[in-house]
Length: 206
Image (tube, rainbow, N blue to C red; front, side, top):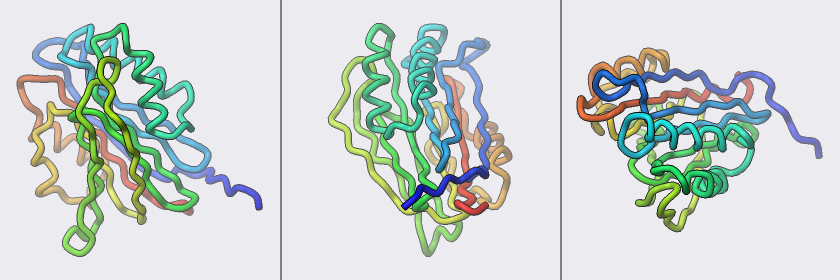
């Protein structure tokens, strides 16, 4: 049996972020890479802030970009090896599989990743189970999870520079870029770099 290759985008997405204080060297980065049957998404938070935090985040981003089709757990393990000479980072990585409409995700540290269904009351919210640790320094035993996706489900990924209650009163029908801008404007902390990535699943036949 042949493999169905999805050529159209399966997500629409947007992001917003800013560096701590007056600096322009944010240690928070996002990665969004299209794949033949889906997409890879990640948010990385280099420890602390400033140039050294950005160096760690850029190193992790390069690893993810080199071979994005690998499973999220394996990608985090590869980042761990690459970041040993940096100050390290925390991160969440998610892969959308359009062939079976599923989301595979894994995280280390306090980069939040949540999936919100359009009808929250009936279908609820799911979140990645991130393990404590630091990529590049102390990697915990990891286990990736896989959840079903439905068209219009929205994935939010945010560093700890975003207050954790940001998702409570959002209108999920807004464009992902508008949602990201709203979250950054209203929930970014003044004490750290901040970044949020928002992606809406469109489905395999979008």
